[in-house]
Amino acid sequence: MMYKVEAIVREELLEEIKEALNEIEINGVTVSQVMGFGAQRGYKTIVRGQEIDVMMQPKLKFEIVVSSDEWKEKTIKKLQEVACTGTFGDGKIFAYEITDAVKIRTGETGYEALQSSES
Image 1 (tube, rainbow, N blue to C red):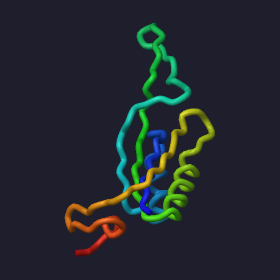
Image 2 (image 1 turned 30 degrees about the vertical axis):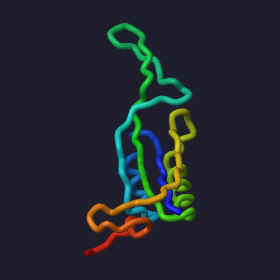
Image 3 (image 1 turned 180 degrees about the horizontal axis):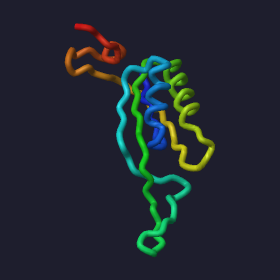
């Protein structure tokens, strides 16, 4: 079974998370800049003397596809370990079952599409 692990985390954790994923030998990661809010509903700030609500927080979304339950659990554990500050806004991690994958260059599918190849 293949899984997609998505983590929505604080922007300032980019380098730490990249290093942590490299430590556990994750070799395929997509990172996007995203905006959103959770239970804390943003924050209030003063702009030109006016108080405004800033609902959308800048975050990073990491997307990682792994080839087994073991790799899913290992990836989630590492992401949680590195991304947890213990305060509101730390983010969320989601895991989805993937039914198939296709490597565009070679046409390989499933598990083989996730593997790196020299040719």
